[in-house]
Image 1: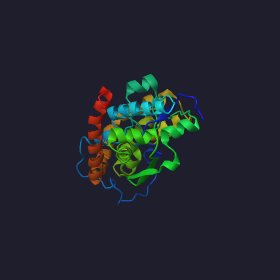
Image 2 (image 1 turned 45 degrees about the vertical axis):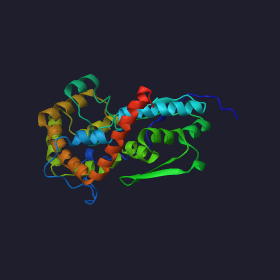
Image 3 (image 1 turned 60 degrees about the vertical axis):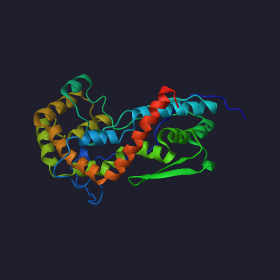
Image 4 (image 1 turned 135 degrees about the vertical axis):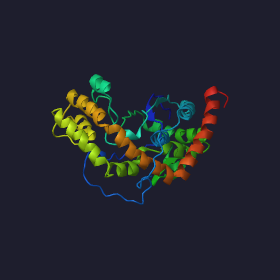
Length: 293
């Protein structure tokens, strides 16, 4: 049976559900497992820990561009056009209470650009989906990443793109399957650190003087906006000013960095393995992007 070609968009990476914790948005006590990687802080934080983690939880750009080329060719051969969908980069601070907010941004946009997730629109026929993801009869490839098991079919364009760029489907899933989920135990532990409470109290006191008496944390103010409870831009402006006046972001980030340093320490072997896979894929990607492979 002939299948009419159809253009559609699909997420490039393996989909992993992100369980966003509200812990950094409240003062509620939390039950943490101290055996989880990253939940016992380092006494001395790596000043580059947050940057390293942000890099780690996002796929490499050139390698993903090369995968676009491989997928487009594969889908074209199957009778479909390919329109890549590029998710916005993720930062760990998006999940640590609230993303940073400058006074200028608050005055210009309020909380309008603040979000902890992206929506991907996907339109495809069953035949197109089968071409992309492969059929169940093709067999599965599975990997375990930080306790999450990811599986894909061996027979689709997705697996082909992983194999051509990253050397194998397994390597590709490891290189692109890392998500914020891996870091959430460390983020949640930082949120529950006793040093966070006085930082939040200073911010809350500042907000009271600005006329907002019912807010305990910047995360709570952001959550009210996202849920439609209070969309007054004055809240965002006061929030940004209070963060600056109290040194909230700097102090909170210092606590977080200790836990992210611990996360990198406790997961050194996995981080090194994934970075090695990505480095090799970067060289392959250059050849694909240059048209020499």
